[in-house]
Image 1 (cartoon, helix red, strand yellow):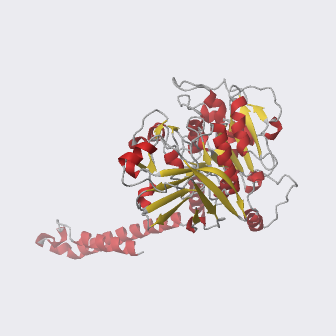
Image 2 (tube, rainbow, N blue to C red; image 1 turned 180 degrees about the horizontal axis):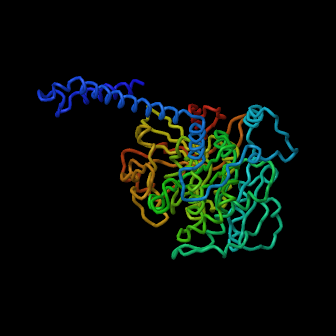
Image 3 (cartoon, rainbow, N blue to C red; image 1 turned 180 degrees about the vertical axis):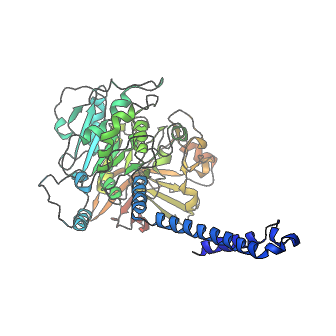
Length: 514
């Protein structure tokens, strides 16, 4: 009403201030009374018309029919997802999403909050994970030994997906069952440099979901040359609510790979975790979706494209490692971020992790250390010997580096460039990591003690690290004289690792015993 009043007050003076002012002319004085009556009548008519129009407008706005149309419009807007170019699936209710546990059919209570509280209180276990391992029938005979290192047949569920069946061998009962993927030749593939197997592998999440196994909360995707730390995988996924649509993983270490594919795409070799609701939504759109992307290179980018259509972003976890590297992985292994180590990939493309061992034997020792202390593996502890001015950088389960000078933690945080990218380039700008060049001075290089054996000491782990002999040891003694290499008479270092609590990133180790 204040607005209407303002309009009225501004309109009436306008009528009285007309530039013509015919009634004020001397000639018209005999008609003065009639003009005044005419002006008054005109103002009255205009005011009445304005009031009638205002009342009509207010009645239209606040009428029940208009209110109902407004709510329908709001409901229509809310029902449309931001990405209007595609058909989006029905978002299922919790009853449709959450599968019953395998041991019994659970009746949901009428009070939904009680059901949600019960779901949250259930601890995540390996039985809630469904693994989908992408493999090749030509490589399976060799790659299955890598899967055997981390697979726990009595505790885990999942399958190896191959393009064709292979003959079973003795001992394969301790491995995941093999399933032959559905034929994917009907889908278009036009990328000139890739391989159509990307179509088949991109459908593993969908095909795993359609198996309808009970009690599944997460679908875990990986390759047959991926090594998983399943205990840390559980710890990472326990942070999330599996009743939501979630896409968990990490991009590549390679800047070129991330630039080509996406910095917000999970790379499957490092592992991808997809929550049950997201897998359900994917199962409804996936085949139509991948037919829209015939030019994409492989499986990960197709999966990412379809998940992007659903509007689900990547939840990045730095413990997933694609490992698009070649050569000596020492620089990455000795500088792991403060995060649970979850996976590594391309383990056959790098040198053996420990000197003097084969690739498979190195991985056996590594997974042994990983199983004994899953939370602590590759986590670093820095100790100082101020008397001799030495720095000890310990990557539990892998290496002890002894530097002949005092280095600050920030100087040790960066990964030393001991490796090259998957494309063969060896330059810091090629990696989306904090990289430093190797120490150029021979006299400042660290002495390395690599893990030799590991076992339990009560509730702690006791690892023995043996001195690594390198080709420039003699040269170092001559060129760095009179300074001798650090710890010249020490051949082994023992590291006692205490069990970590939930605040594991605040815990330090009782470091050294000579």
